[in-house]
Structures are given as structure tokens and as C-alpha cells.
Image (tube, rainbow, N blue to C red; front, side, top):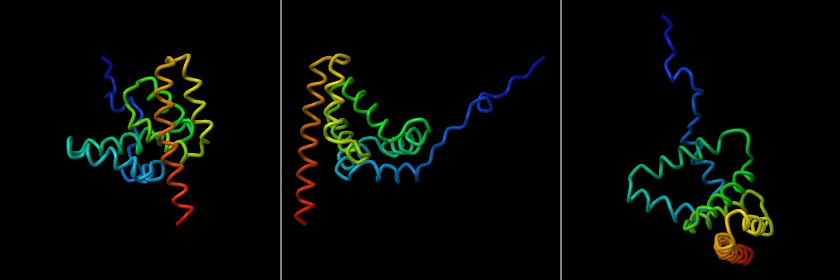
Length: 146
């Protein structure tokens, strides 16, 4: 008779680091993006926002294999394909700038997506990107004046 190992002994432990998740969130997302989602979510579903930060930024984002820039490319594509997620897409456009993508590269993501996700979804993504990029341009101008 053979005894099989418990499932928890067969799987590689996941790395979930809450503190690192919040540090990475602050590095990747501007305050506007954080405030647009997390406090309201906390009010509606207490603890869920913390789970998102811990699981995504303190877990998935810490995995090896993709750079932060590559992760942003994937995020832009996935959110555009999903559609109807404009606030999240706008936040990820701003995050893309923070990880070093240029405005031209961000726009080109949506152009490239058109034959894969459809022209209407690509156009919707471009509208969100244009608004987010304009907002960032305004913030940049204000910072330069200060």
C-alpha cells in the first residue's frame, strides 16, 4: 500500500508578501489610480482590496519571468480585450508610463490589438489611453511650473 503525499507537499509554495505588495503598488501606480479603486472597494467589500494588493502585487507581480514593462503590455492587451473596464485600463496606461513605456508605444499597443480584439475594442482602448495620456501631460506641465 502506497501513501501519497499531501497536496500541499506536492505543490511549490506561493510567494505572497503583503508588505512588498504595497511597496510595489506605490512604485507602479500613482495615487490617483490607487484612490480611484481601493478605498471605494474597501467600503463595499472590506478586506477585498487588501487581498488584491497582496495576491497581485505581493504575489503574481513578484514572480520571475516577466519584467514590469512586459506585464504592462499584457495588462493593456487583456483589459482592452475584456472591454468595459475603462477605469482599470486608464490606470494601467498611467502605470505603463511609470515603467518606462513611451506614449507612442502605448498607442501602438492598441493599434496592434485591432485585428485580434476588433476595431471597436481597439478604438475604445485608444479613447481611454488618449484621456489618460492627456491627464498625465497636464500633470507633467503642472509639475514643471511648480
